[in-house]
Amino acid sequence: MTAGLDHDGGWRRLHPLSPVVRSYRGFLAVLTLAALSSSGAIGSGAGPRWYDVVLPAAVAVAAIVNWYVTRWKLDGVTLRIETGLLRRDSRQLPVARIQAVDLVRPFLARMLGLAELRVRLAGSGDADGRLAYLTEQGAVALRARLLAAHHGLDPATPEPAEQVVTSVPAGRLIGSALISTAAIAAVVVAAGAVIAVVSPAGLIAAAGSLVWWLIIVATVVWRHVSSQWGFTVATSPDGVRIRRGLLGTVAETIPVQRVQAVRMVEPLLWRPLHWCRLEVDVAGHLGRDQAEGTHAVRKALLPVGSPQEARRLLRIALPDTPPAVTAPPRRARWKAPLSYHFLAAGHDGTLAVAVTGRVNRETTWVPLAKAQSMRLVQGPLQRMLGLATVHLDAAGRRVRAEFRERRQEEARALVTELAALSRTARKKAEYVTPPVPVRPVIPAGAAAPGDGDQAASVAPPVNASQREA
Amino acid sequence: MSPSPRLWRMRCAEVIAGGGLLAVAAGIVAGLIAGPAAAVAAVAVVLLGSLAALSFARNRFRSWAYTERDEDLIVERGVMIRRLSVVPYGRMQFVDVSAGPIDRMFRLATVKLHTAAAASDARIPGLEREEAARLRDRLAALGEAKAAGL
Image (cartoon, rainbow over all chains, first blue to last red; front, side, top):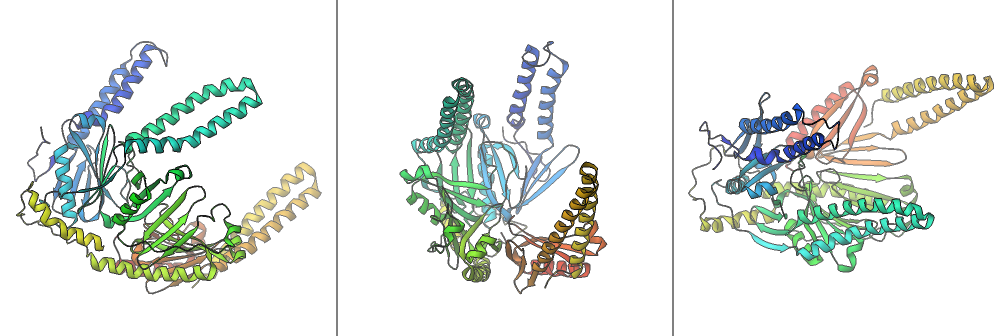
């Protein structure tokens, strides 16, 4: 039942049912194509061909071979994954560098009691650090071991207890998705109305395409709702744990000290209801598109919620008190007429916050200890008005706090000040949380797995160090 | 510090060669279509354009500047849009030194600093080869000494 033990140095195989789960989509696609082509719906329709048999067989064989040649092992501080039939591919994932750990369970895997474990490192792409599939208990246990080792504890430490902070009610989730699509629907209806006025004949054609539009919108809403269904945020000494999903479920764990930036988005249409969305940026990404949207660097910490909930989560992700913000001078209206009403920014010794946006208000918090670079940009119009914009970049593609349209002298001083402050913040962060001790040999732990008391006694120190970090 | 004066010569050569080729092509096309007067006008227009490009390149070349400070590197550039980047050495992921065929003719190289943020652009073009190598080694050494985790 459990993954087969190889008995050569602790190497393990994935679960024997993984080829089934991994290839069923491709298998179904090929079978559908074969059925279509043999029934004459597409192609020449000359009955079954040899490739109708060979293609599904090839897909199945490839999946089985892939399972057969893949093995993994966790030895102390590195997770090793070896795969590949002709070209052996050996990955070593240092546990100390973990950015996040996800437990993904697509629908079929869930039926079979399997789960996929994804380990995220900074800058890792594609299929790095995926173990698909393990048994559910096996995956949970491995996650606990990885995270314990990540915090420099004995890997045998059982998973610490977690505290649920907030969850998103189904009604609010569906409501928010519908409101968001209402804007698109309004545009479509308006376009239809215009066409109807111009030529009634065109309306019939437009109505035909309207059906397609509705299908697309429904798909988008469905995807959003099913992936964010039952969204629950919990804190544990391992970090912030997010659980979500309707058919396939995802459990993400983000170590708090890995948060690069937090963003709060308040869309225009949600404003009457005082709803907002909270997102965190974590370095590292996954290229694969399996199981409902974990491929973004940006993770929703709260898909929709009240400002109070958002503030509570913000305090968990960034324990420091957010600094006060100031608005840019009034002359900035000439440069940014559409976004001036939102523009504001501020910073203190640990955190920078910037508010931007034209229609949707976006607030970004970047811890100065995570700043990668500071930039000052001044366009011709800004130069005429004596303004400049300062960017504080964090790791990622578009992760930054933008101090938009500040006074020129202020911006100049700000760049140097931010550089100095982020240097001190970085040094302090390193002093408080020294690099996780790398111990090649983990002493045989006194902790017995499944011992609840152990979790309680181990938890506080980790929690404390995280709060300080 | 600023890039080597040879970068300016390289830009001149690029503009002159490009402008010259374009002038000849424009002259021939205009001459075939609308006669010799048009050919002269076309060549004149292209040459004027090249002159404008040359003055822009001059300003652009002058705008480049970089300063190595104790903890970070500052790079300034831009004529229309002025940009100033501050990259702490500790945040450097890797350093690129690249030289295209034209760069090599002028014995120049471009040094580029990469951080984990995609947006931070610290690129210094037109460095003399020795200076590029020195800067690369210095940055690599400093980056290692001051490296900070993500």
